[in-house]
Image (cartoon, rainbow, N blue to C red; front, top):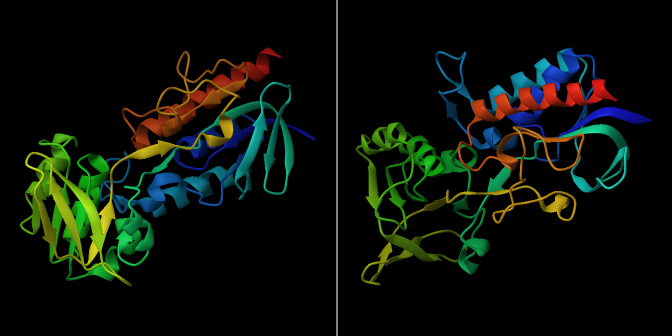
Length: 304
């Protein structure tokens, strides 16, 4: 059986594309991935997605989106994509257990958190080192933690942790934060949040659990130690495009090169969300891109 439309990814972009495609009668199949739901599954308070005047938890928003897609008979495969072949048509997609073919394809695989790549970070991951405050913040209630990073993700993590932890210290390698002004002001208003700018984490201390960090000042190279119980890494994201090499054009950061909103160089292959967008990286912009990709896929299918 050849599918009309397959959507790879189940974050805001993928699920919005599925909702629109299903309502258009395209009977879409979504390959969710084993870590379904995208980055919002690692987010707590979402106050900037329209329609939720009191805010909503990230996982709850994704659950609602999936139910909405299911309401219109969207089908799901909860597996990762191993490889795709865009040099033949219909396009070929291999998951962990399935070989699929599709006439049109929307890629909405998003991006994943980046790590510091310190040996001590790898050794203590899950023992005090985390990239997800909503997942692990509860375990540090009343304790001291650091957040590494200076962008929106770091500020959101720091804001969430400030509600649980005794003290939160934000470590950022530059002299200024990169987060949007509203988020900076929010975090700076917290009395239990401190900032160490022009600083990088050299080593995470501890044997079976985190006990502290070694921090180097990038201006004078002085090393200091800070006693903390937890380390939350929030330094950016890497697009989930490893399965696409040799199939689509990627830029120097690994993001998919997009032409004319959602189109790629391969006719019938469309893109939505953070897998191509390293600038905005918002749930609402990803959802909007998913809507556009669905319309473009529908137009393409109608032209055949």
